[in-house]
Image 1 (cartoon, one colour):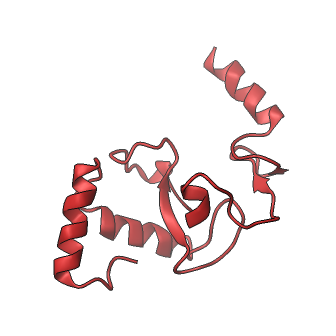
Image 2: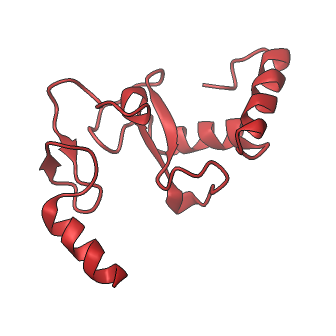
Amino acid sequence: MYRHLAPAKLEMLRRQLIAKGYPVYWPELSDLVREEANFTCCICGRRSTSDTVTDHKDGKPWNCNWDNLRVVCRGYNTGGSCSPGKPFKCLGCGQPIRHRGYCLACNAERKEASQ
C-alpha cells in the first residue's frame, strides 16, 4: 500500500500520520501486517490488496503491539461494514452476527471478566 509511493509523497504522508499519533515506522509496519495476513480481512475473510487496511483493535494509533493490529476491509475501518450482505463476525468467537463487535455471549463474558 505504501511502498509504491514516490519518496516525496511517502514523506508527506509520514508527517501527516505522525501528527495523528502514528509512529514514524507506521507505513512499513502496516505493509508488513497486511502481508502477514495475506491481505485478508479478519472480519469477513475477503482478500484484497487494495481494499484492506491495518486497524488498531483499541483505536489508539500509537499502540502498535502486534496483538493490537489486524487487517480489515477499508469500509469496516471507516465505520461501515465489510461487504454488503455479509454478516459481521464476533470479535470474540468468530460467529456470524448482525452488528459490529461482540455477540451476546462474548459480551457477557467480557463484562464478567472486567468486574
